[in-house]
Length: 362
Image (cartoon, rainbow, N blue to C red):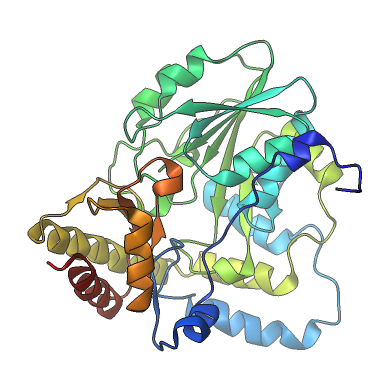
């Protein structure tokens, strides 16, 4: 390359999102494609969110509220914290990047599970820090190994609960034992993007606990709230950490429609609860059907799960595309015979099962 780009930037593997439905329809000439690859909520956004969006379209000539005051206030009320404890971002990965740029740099390290959300590694590298990968213990985040890996260079630890891509989780008791080993000057980021789907009452829920000042909670409106296209995430943290992030975030990092949609969705608890129930029913249906087909599935606390097709997962993924079903191969994540799928609507789940039977000739 003729431009002078730092080696730590060139070492980054670009994030590869799933192909959009429109592109696949053009490529394969198939209509009514079913997308189960991106852990999205097929139920869609709350009607209250859609209504709020329509009511604010005419004011798009004005810049967004740079403080996201209304949304921040509603979040503060919901979780019994102060506005000053909250950062709203363009997706939770916006806040991940802010944390990395604020608290890392050359000579500092961030621990994270492997595999996990790729944006942890990307954000750490773009900050000049060093990501330290700690392999999973089977499908579980190895909290003991993470604690043992802490050194004087460690400034940050990323945890995902439930974990993506495995759907595994850790309990409150496990987390408390882990935190007892972690120095108070290390920031522990608990990414709870899928926490609303969790069914185990013992799962660690950071916002149901009295948090230490070095714990940062990340959540999103992209999953359970069905607002992935609006890119709204939020972080709840000690005021001192939040004040640092406010120094470096973009002044209008969350657009106006995203703010009003998220605020309205937050108020529609019944719609949220109904959507989560549909996801649970979808997971149960898929697991039962796959079990009858003799296909192993793995426990999950999220809206997605892993299944072992006993073949090259990428090849099965490609064959499923020909039937109009988008899944995610886990081959590059270290699970060469596994697919990851999220629950869809009932008719989408049935279409997946029928297509998989044909592809595997079951």
